[in-house]
Image 1 (spheres, rainbow, N blue to C red):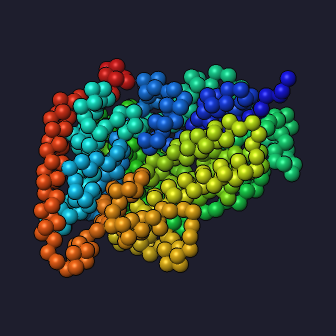
Image 2: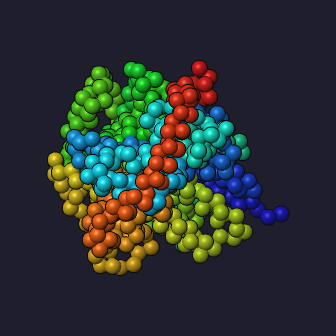
Image 3: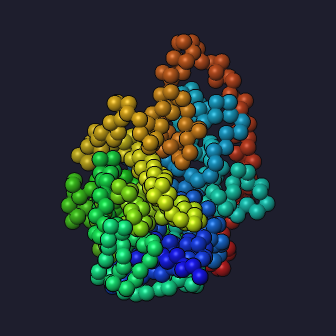
Length: 521
């Protein structure tokens, strides 16, 4: 009889139990053990997700009603950004989930740009998302629907929503509900035995064919034992610290909204995540510009004056240090790193769990092979690192496009060299910065970009076209004919929005929808 392939997962938390649940589902013929320390706490601040998590939930057969109530979860339709472009101006904008809807348009999303030019560049940037993403009707009116009758066009409830939840509770729920055959051991790892082929055993007794490092920032196996080099992204991502706390609702029905909020302040930005029973919030900053003590003062000042939190001095605050970047390889010999042990970008765009479920998807596919070869491992590293770097560059665009200059932090953020390849022309496998430039300077259009750059760039006034390019395209002529060509399309688009708005008015409030569907009143 052939011996069963053995996997040992080291570390619990959301990454460890997401790994265990995934492999239990996709590799049921393998022997899986999870070992977690009884004394080391999890980071536990990943409370916001992206829409791609629905693919992973579907793969594991997890329904909303199954986990949301246990994890203090709410639905998420968008991410709102405030004061990232400039301070103190009405320049907030959204990156909503879902698919662009350009029905009725003539030049796709550039119809909005042309309208803005025609109106003397006075069109607020937040209206871009409102033109093309039907979800914004729900966001702006604090409504929600599962759209079972499909009357709310271009909105797929399974695809176009994400979640806010307590990640620590999520790990516990996965452990108790999706890992029935996983061997669970609570024990500190004191010794790691290895040879030229990788890890031989843990504590001299736990042996496996594959070890998965889910030990968070400690990176106990891939970093401490295997010494795999870490590639820092601090050149494109300015922040390395955070203060986090929990805030109670004072008016739950009003404060609970279907989006994550990010507000830029003196030396970084503040997240605000509305869960069912409380609000998760934190200040992400760079300790190169402000001490931890002064950063806490800035955070408290924001909570008191902007968020109107009255008991800031009584809240419990947790300081978190991080290094941004990723290991040179995330699969080394017989070790795979998943979660914070593999790499970390920063909390912006709610990407904390994104790399976890995406890496696990690719790992599960590799493990379908009878024998995992060196090429399999190298291909896994290529895919994961390319995806990770591309997302890191996307996050960097939120800083690179700023025009804030009210502190030294923001002045230096503007003057960073984010991508030397932009002027050397060297070819890279990553396409974040370079693709963004190609879309703006060659295509004059963002519509084909997957993943939200259209919302971020337009929100930060880095428009794909402008009056200069319009004049250039018409050889200096009068663009009146161009405007006339899409006025009818604009009317059709707005007529559709009006019809959709009639449906929205009849929908339950966001709070009532959650209360009735998930929390049963």
